[in-house]
Length: 213
Image 1 (cartoon, rainbow, N blue to C red):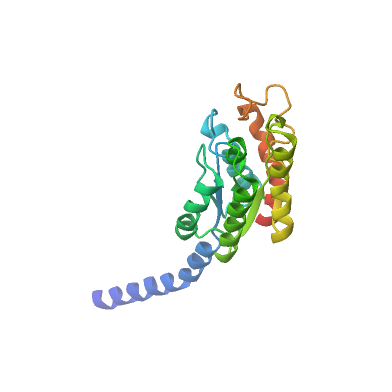
Image 2 (image 1 turned 90 degrees about the vertical axis):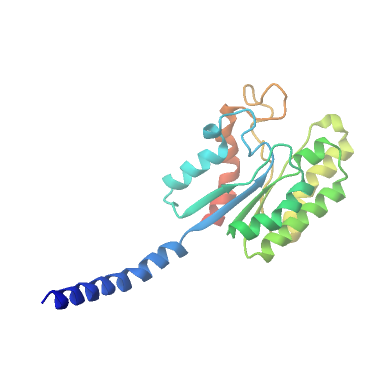
């Protein structure tokens, strides 16, 4: 009698496992990854991590019912397009992302790197993201006018040019509504304050939302 009972219990357990296995597999399949490859603007420089726009993004995803998205922030303060390009293959392999936010170029511009080099690096990143089966979101930047009109214009033109060439989603200027507003920039004049993090998210959200949904 005990043997029969044990066999029946084993059969019931097996049926239960087989019934719920597809459900568990589907839940795993629904998990998507958003990878952010950026510089100090996305690495919470000078602000608390929980106040930064990336943390606010995670909260926004939850409030929008997009809990199936995992946000991986691979941003590093001081990062350039060259550094991002070198790190990208490993990041793509490790995280298998569905969307990649490319928020780089600002440090290149502040260091006076040639615009054509910046453009080539960003183009290579876009191509690698696409080859990995992910969607890129390019985040545009501008630099202060003291670098000269010719250079600042050439730098600013990189982002819309690449977006047009590769038909890529573009945030035109990440610091729009921030760089010239009182209390929105840290004393260095380069990095946004904690008060500006909501606006950073507001600037990127419209383009990001269309990719998420």
